[in-house]
Image (cartoon, rainbow, N blue to C red; front, top):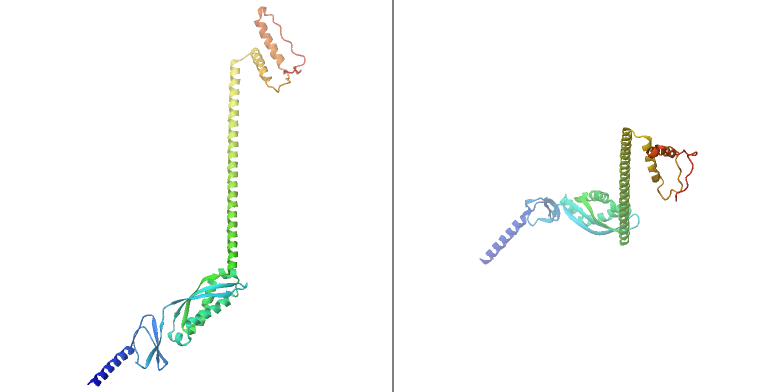
Length: 312
């Protein structure tokens, strides 16, 4: 009885193993390559799949989702003979599991080497300045070459990104100095522009101030002249209204003579011709007030414009 039990146990174990090998569950967004006696038979898609146990075998399980693979920095020589290190990131997706398994031994390594050679071809035709400013152009050219080459491998390259472009240390120092000089230049230009604008505004302000001051002085002078004219008009009207005689006018004229002679600079005084008439009228007035009324008149000078002696 014991050998029969052992055989039954062995059969149960074999059946269990056969069931495990027969039922294959493939996750979503995955595929499996089935080989029968070492030859490709079919591709298992996501879900429950039945295979022949001990005859069919799973060669490879492939993830069909988009993959991201960063590549280490690669030294590349530019057109102006400068060595730059470029980091790249490849976004790819397996579209044909069979081709990805049988058309290339390691599609990751193949993509990396193809990326390096393509980068050297593209960067070799650009100088450093264009390399640093043409990332989109480099990405597009690199993606086109990779997508065309990896199509037969069942790989689709969705995007290619340059993570970093690192020029030599000496070039970085020169670029930093140039950037610092450019910043200093822009700062000096802005400062000069500010000073220029300030001077313009100051000049405009002084101009407006001078114009307003001149207008104010003109208006003040006009108002002053108008006031003086009004005063003269009032005095003239008052004089005509009072009807003064020649005696009063002569007396007022003589009272103004000392004011005319005032000042340290008046060393020479010209006697006006009108003084004779004033003295004559004043003499007549004094003669009328004198006792007996026999006052004499002051004779008119023979030369009205003779010079009076200097007043010290």
